[in-house]
Length: 317
Image 1: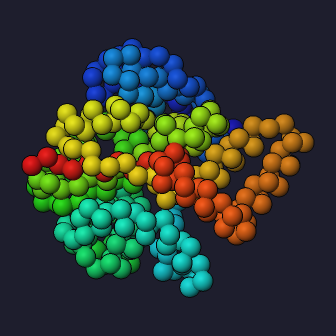
Image 2: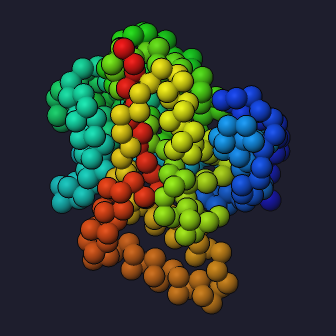
Image 3: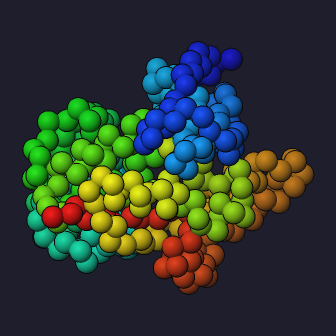
């Protein structure tokens, strides 16, 4: 085995972060389909509250290996040729519009800002005082230098941030990676002003792809996704933490997310059929396919049935 695949797998039991229940019903058991690293991992549904969690789960020393090559450098859109920028801006622009409809100005913190594509698009609007938080130091420095914004280093639960300061907090595809998501949602509540908005993009357990593709659905993303949130459970948690759920919206990454799910599915085919599947994937990635699927995927997105869902919550006054 290579050094990359010879690390120890150390597991720990995990009680439900919401209700503390230790027991759960098996929902799924599977491998790392993204990086093909070793191990089998289990998702269970809490018998008390219905929250889905990975149990047992890897200690951080082991789990960190599953992020090497996963959180890769993605350039800001401005670094691409001009003819590519319009397409690449579509996803971030939809997210910015989602925020602008509720809160068109004020202080905004993007938690887990990555390489800064959402902040880049928000900066184009010129309406918010923008900040970001990114635990990967090199990526945080890249965004800081490129956009000339305040970017906090480190983990969300350790960052020195002022309470009651922000009008908007955004966590795009972040909450499911956190080992204590309820604690972090409580911190979101403390950081927001009364009436401030929280935007959460999470895997959509009620979406069509999960039901059609089952274990190959992108949203499982074992072992990096530690928690998954059924809509009813998510609404209950947010309400009890002092939020009002103001809306649910389909996420704008439909084409890419479906491509990843199809890729996991095709990888499971026997070799002769896999060649055909790879050919179909090549067609799926083509501009003609992307254009042809724009309408049906857009309709599914509007109906909240695609892979990801954005939960919009407002801090109660």
